[in-house]
Amino acid sequence: MTDKMQYSQTAYCQMALASASANLFFFKAPVLSNYYLGNDTYRFLWLRSFHRPVLLTLTQQAGGATLRTQFLTKSATAPRLEQILFVPPTASQAETARLQQEFDAKRKAPKVQRELAEHNRPAEPLPQLETIHSITPRQWQQVEQLLATSSFQQLPPCESSTATDGAYWVFESHQANGYHMVFRHSPDKRDEFRKACEYLLELSSARNEERY
Image (tube, rainbow, N blue to C red):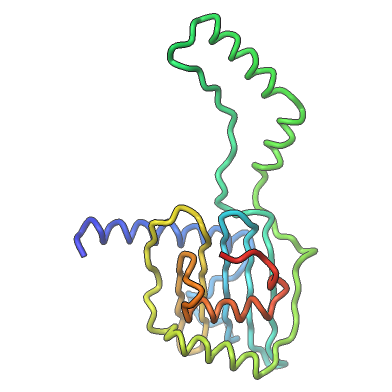
């Protein structure tokens, strides 16, 4: 791998993981990589280009395992919408003045202002959609078996992608013996890593969300 390719992959991974961190912050999710929090945890963050973010947290506690499903209103890193006036380079002074007048009138329209304000609101959790339910020992074991089949612990944390849309799939393992994270961009349906993530989705209240 050339230095340029290495830099490109590093930059891509830094950007992708910064987006993941920003969304986890808005989910008010704890940092799992610093130190052991006392409970074995698997966490799947699903960031889709055209749909709301999903966070699944599978935790093993003294009373048994639970799966928590959370949603955000939108991606925490969604770009802001701004109104921009475009004036053709060949436009006359009169044409420019007319376009400016029309633009100002449209920008001040209450409907447009409401739509812009709504789009540009910060991401927020959707507590009314949040669910927490019990997971059986067999289901916990199945998650671990699927991760083992995918060689999760040996997978590199990040692989770059040239795709411009799709979804970020971020899976974290937080155990007493260590932490590991794997990020992939729209993994293939036959990919064993994706199968592990999708099994968790099937157990959750996000099972019917659009997948890509």
